[in-house]
Image (cartoon, rainbow, N blue to C red):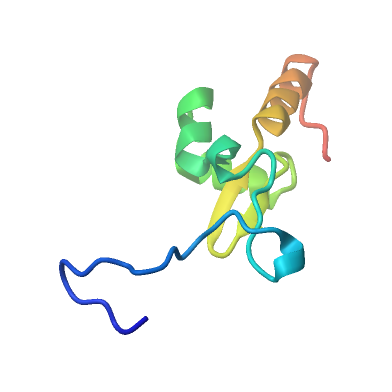
Length: 92
């Protein structure tokens, strides 16, 4: 596959659903479509993205760093909210 120019079609898929044994990529249950971005978390909490980054940095909100992006599992956000309702900032 050569360099792509404007309007050129990709002749082979970049991502696939091949098995790990074939040396290719495989689908993982849950996937990135279930993870929340910092903006989504901020919207759900009614706070700024700066606040969410701070919660993550201090270890108050469990998260995953994928390349340069911070992502939060919905269950971790729910747990964080429960801890806040129970009376405070419990470190994870």
